[in-house]
Length: 182
Image (cartoon, rainbow, N blue to C red):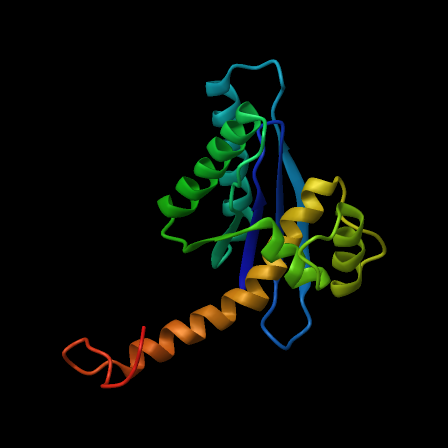
């Protein structure tokens, strides 16, 4: 499975592509950021992010896209910009018919480091170790995007198998067998 991880942001939108499967070694294909000028208008910035993500999708042809779920912060303008960049990534994936999964920051941290409270340095160190790199992807936004892709491969695969098992267990009428809960 090839996953494009997106760490949304208006100035630096982290992107990272990882190949792999649960229980097998993972391989980083590329990591980087889509940058937009802080003094540009919001429409120009969002268009720049859209064009950058489209380039990554075209170049790497992922099977799915993992995006960091936006969470509430104290700074509303930061949250809004992050949410807008996130929406752009989701729309780019949807335009290509790619499945999109949102992962919370603590879910990604827990998957990659074992702790939902890990800092950026710990994430970078574990990404380096998991992917057998010489050093963490730079800048930190790129490392976060790679961590999202790793999280999706490890956790998304289990979720996909669970959904397939539930679908297979359904009776022809589309109902679960008696005694089975959703």
